[in-house]
Length: 430
Image 1 (cartoon, rainbow, N blue to C red):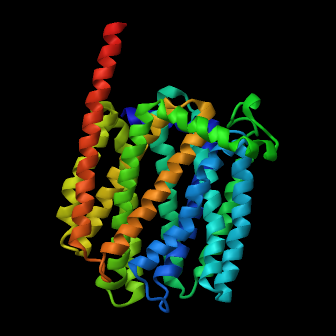
Image 2 (image 1 turned 30 degrees about the vertical axis):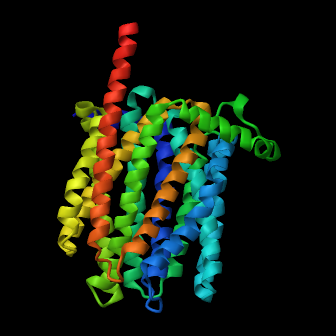
Image 3 (image 1 turned 135 degrees about the vertical axis):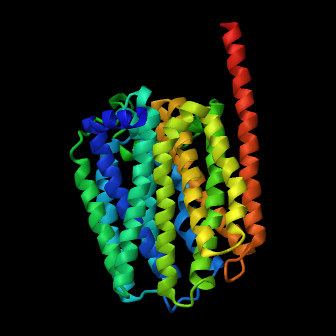
């Protein structure tokens, strides 16, 4: 199979393997840390969780970095990306140890959220840097397959880390602090793995690196404005970001729904609900893996727009069919489908952005990409908080999500026709 052959070629590239190792370790730690936070906030027996509480937690952890995220991209386009991975993960390891101490000390929630905010904030630099660095270790001809393997493998690593955290949490009660320490150890391993690459390998090019922090910060506003202008001049990248942002909103709304169903609707015991949530996470991870294998073939057959249209259209049909019964079995099937269509769209969007944006601007654009992800997810949690009853059963929310998926498919169809017409005009002029 061509996909298997391309995967073998990629894995023979030494620098690609090293960058992939940094991603896998970092995102495994992310999965461990995020599940520790979720179980501490949602499934602690002493906490009476509501959709509004979940939305508040997401807003506290994500929205501040929606304001500073674009500035992170400007710095990424001036700092050595290898150094960002090294020092960023070292700092996260230290901060995660601090979070564990705060859990053990039973401090007020605001202090816990502040610690978590710092850990997740550094993640903005690391994830944007990983995406921006990928074209430096892979040639353009294999960028699609690299985008299938690398970010999806990272997502699967996060799912695996989450699964490991679920197991530790279920085996031993009151083990949130131990789970957070496990995440800290993995962050340290990711930092050490980055040392296997040279400082200059991942860019940006030396003549674009501005080593003085004050000089970089002073030019942030100008750099951000130029990054936005660069993106605005590339409609393909703008359209891809619009589609994946809307898909992320849908995924976020349904994630909060499943959290509430597991916590209150299906089981009276918190541990049983947590176990089912772990199964849902694993099933969704299987969908992400399927997308990684299937997407390169699908793009080859359907084209980039065709594959994204298929993903959004399938979700529009299957979400109400599987979600409206509000039963565990159909919801688990829906989790697989959503993992598949969300990651399939993201792989395609990543490739469109990477091939449409110049290397000198990739850090800024992927930071904007990351900000859109955060805002969409928090916005989805807020909408869910307004619409969900305490047990998570909301027909209106499921129908709304299905309509948004349908709208995405229609928009992509329109953009596909527009893009095809533009290409024909250019060919006729040529």
